[in-house]
Length: 473
Image (cartoon, rainbow, N blue to C red; front, side, top):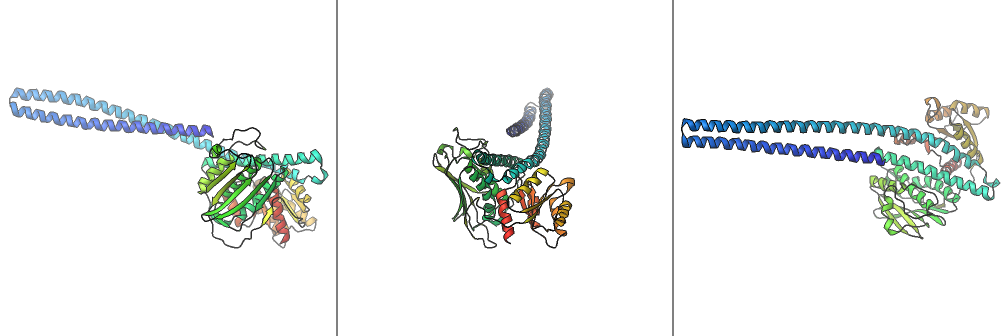
């Protein structure tokens, strides 16, 4: 990314220099032409004056010879000026062609990078999802001592890997300039209630207390981009808090809702509070983070906040902790939402559901089924919708919930698979789509179809909370 930015900057400098040279050459030529016209005019006036004064044939001859020599000299100058102008114009055309070729090459490289990241996103998220699901399916009650500690450490490590992958993909999307905010009014709890349980589980595995106070306030922003900002702030708080507590909460202000993340972590010196929002900057101090980052999380917060016109706030003291927040404009409420205080990661016992799991990847399919079974549900895992229907009919069951991967084998799509299962039973159970595709159009289409979207790797606490709500309905 640095190399591409450097090439873009170099091309811009070359283009500006070429334009400046061409403009200067044109200015010089115009000045020289004006001077030539003045010289010819002055010569004509002088000849006319000489003829008028002397009036003889010889004087006429001298004047004509003098004028001929002056015109010859000026004609040579004019021809030289034309040659120089022609060269300057040819040079400018060559530079413009070179710049056009460089831009086309950069665009092709950027398209190739985008396709690679899209493929890498899917290919990396699949095994990561499987690993997280299999870890979740392990029964903690049978583990003690170091084994339980290792399980918690593995969860934290995989959560950090997932966060790093999300960060790299966010940076790629920002660099490509392909992000257009989709503004809308929504309750802030629609974002926080979904993402907080995920981090609550990670914080619990890291030995931290993690609290969350919800809010009934409505805000106006891009829900997905605001979620990205909050994920980076919460992730950073957990990474730099070695012991103590992390709190996520909201505060109403006249100009908007301040969403803040408080921690009792290592803190940051005042001299670093602005620099930490630049890419790759890390506060120089050894052993201050739980896991090693690459210094991109807060730069993403800064870039998205600028894109959404959000004000950011930060307060920190070394050894005492930090507070990071963003001020989001209020939105227009379309319904009622009740605030509640909860400790993230707490989950009550939920009723058993018959759940169809459709995924052509065996690792994700079996891992999710094992996790659902651990939670007390009755999963039926299949690679296709037809296979799922056959298994449900064979077990004399009808599905209470359907979970399908979006991209299935043979160009199949998850929403079509869900509809196929629904058609075979008397009622249409609620359903969710799993995907690693960040395309906003896909997200909008899923919401329009009434489908819940589960980003890979799956947010297991959020999925558990979703199933609890379904079981209570």
